[in-house]
Image (cartoon, rainbow, N blue to C red; front, side, top):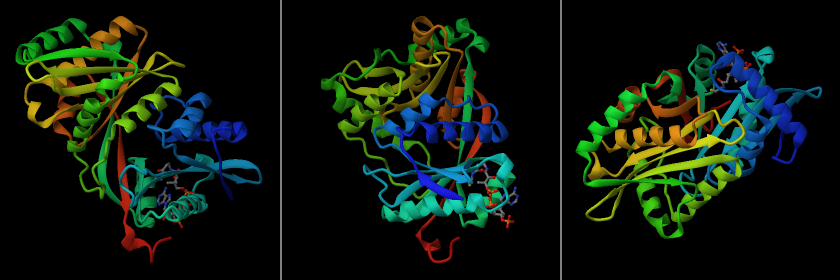
Length: 335
Ligand SMILES: CC(C)(COP(=O)(O)OP(=O)(O)OC[C@H]1O[C@@H](n2cnc3c(N)ncnc32)[C@H](O)[C@@H]1OP(=O)(O)O)[C@@H](O)C(=O)NCCC(=O)NCCS
């Protein structure tokens, strides 16, 4: 198999990647919305917050059969590379997955990374493959989906009113699009509270959120064609930002939305702000983006508080994703 990295300007490689990824998804996670070329192009040009993954295409006699990805950050976790490795269902069990994994790990090492993470939908295949390459399961992320036609908005409103009675000390601020310059620092400080979400046995450091990273996130998401909605809770007495929740709507397929961060600062927890923020987002989006059909979210399975809120809001489990990691101690014996 020939393995070559490619970039967002390589239309042929992008198209091959999208076809491959959709074939893999159809086989392993059929509920996941098919990827479009535009999404892939945006992903590899802008990333989540301006640090795009590097994709690799594997071909045999010109036929695309596998792909890999390498993702590293310069903000934090300088020891870590997160990699992806997927093989077309018709070409499995011939060693191609192992070759691709070796290639992306080598590319990660060339960037000085010593620990490698990879995630996969829960299956015997991925578990066996991961174990074969010395990766251990460290955490479980669950993909849930809220289907808006299933939601009783009268009930949602009642939950809002109930939560509101516990949160009178806070005002809610709805913000479409980018954060104003004068609030960027406060939103950055607030964003760091996502580090309190459980990471289980993963060897990862807290993420750092300088204001420029928040701006880079907003610029990247909007450049990718996502419309950005943020609900903030502000403590009335001190003016402090106490929590927020962010949802993006796909401009290309506006019936699809995705939940990004929701977090409440430690000292403001226990007042039902998490629930309030998310319900307010639902009520707001119903007015301004009434075409949305579903909102997807991902949480650590062990994140009881956030999962509890999501279950109350009608989110249903779609799939379990296992996060595997392999540390520096495996370097001499791997592959
Ligand atoms: C996992 C995946 C990448 C494996 O690709 P592949 O090309 O079939 O893998 P390889 O042929 O290199 O397999 C290497 C070893 O992994 C293990 N393995 C792979 N598939 C397996 C399966 N279905 N059952 C049991 N063991 C398996 C075996 O030990 C195998 O060696 P062997 O064939 O000599 O017994 C592929 O099934 C895939 O794309 N799955 C979906 C995405 C995914 O799970 N990615 C990996 C994340 S950990």
